[in-house]
Length: 126
Image (spheres, rainbow, N blue to C red):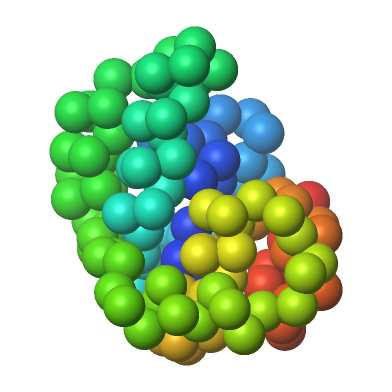
């Protein structure tokens, strides 16, 4: 199983937050490959800058390899893939993550149930 973590799921994983159910935490740990998109770090950086998120960005970046995860760069194909998506969700970062998951293919792990409307590759944690 190859996973792509949505930004908030990655943050919850790093913080060992109880917002990430134990079964989901275990599922992530047992996955063959787990990816964190550069888009998630970019989204976090913007939220830090505007005061909506309090996280050490350097630690966020280091957390990718410390967790045994893989960094997923944003490619031109990913960016172009956003144009093919229906207008189910307005958030550009979420749309980019969906495009990356479809290109992979990767299973996108998220708590945003709206994203499930894009594909069976979207796994909503509950």
